[in-house]
Length: 539
Image 1: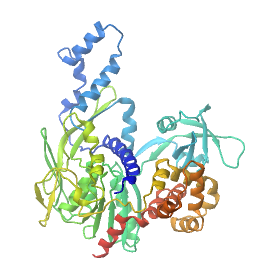
Image 2: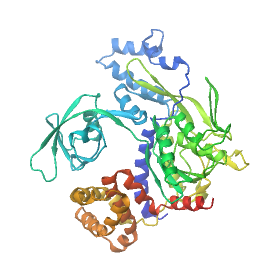
Image 3: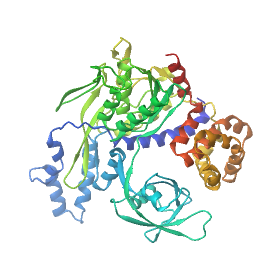
Image 4: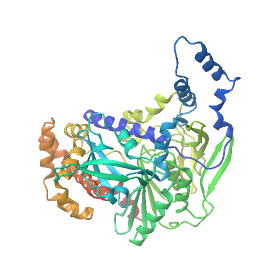
């Protein structure tokens, strides 16, 4: 890859790595019980015969200055768990609810998706049937006050917004709203309710025979959502399926097992787990799946981890379908969550999981050395792995055999059957700048805001894209970027034009139609999707 492309890819990669690390806090769980002594780790601090307790007591009694013992205990808890492995974590009490919400399938709030633009909270979409829709909030509304207090400015953050808008069910929050075309500020009182958290971004027919399901995590409701998506697509004529697990960092192990079961005949091994205090457990298919005879392709990339890798590994090792994309993250450790007496919790690694062929996909790590572990993906990028298959260096050279005798390897993620490099065809210094400064998204948001009344007339992505194709989005965007400090370079704009137009249309469509309008436009020129369609059409 050309040197000039490093800036964009490195920055995007680092941002996604940060998201993946956060995703690993939401690591997969099993419902089997494990030794309750794990849950008493921090209770032992209070015992007189414990060295940690003795040290804390001496500090509290004799140290020269006043020390916040509770805060010191929190820091010691974090350090203690960090010494185990990269995926065992301590979760403070004030963060536990937020961490759990993403996988539990719902939370209590007002039911809006928002974005912070120009130091102001703007409602991007209102969840259908939710509390905000019931009182009349609209997409494009600006939240100016919350409970009569001004809520704008540089100190507003996503975390702060969620802390104020979420809350116990049936509690109320008063919002001051500025609406386009209405001079006065409007006041709404919203009663918080249960808000669903979807784990399937989209399911749609990508060809007359092929249905695509994009899964963003394996949460509490993912399996039921998955069954609904399968049924919907079959009703629309799907006989072949694409399961898109790219950038899916995992979740609940049992949900992944149930989903894999839909594709396997009876008595095939899906995954097995085993640990020092955790007897081997084999998960087998029961033959009741709805898609046992339907061709399937699984898409993965370097951010597919944990339960995503179980899914891909089971399909691959049982020779049930094709895995396409790039080498996955390499997380083969099973965590269980145990809450502590003060409302905090630990997610402790209790076992390793193995694919049906017997391979562990966990990449190497050194105990207590999270820094190098977290930089592993970036090092893959520097080594060129995202662009050429020959650059891939797996740690485990032991050969394992699939059900039909194909050779596969473990010890560092799932290797796809078909490698698809990252596409850099459209990359230019101009594109790097407009992406790095977030101008694509900001322009799309501004365009949607100014043209909302025309855009909402289009009820599906095909109609909306046709309308957007009639608009000179690229010209308008170049002028916008120039006003914001990005000098136009025509030759580079010509090269990157298709990328810019496609992403602008996708972002604008998402602002109007949510993900149902975003992915079908974005995926039109996706090399991985194109190759997947080619492979499925052979069957």
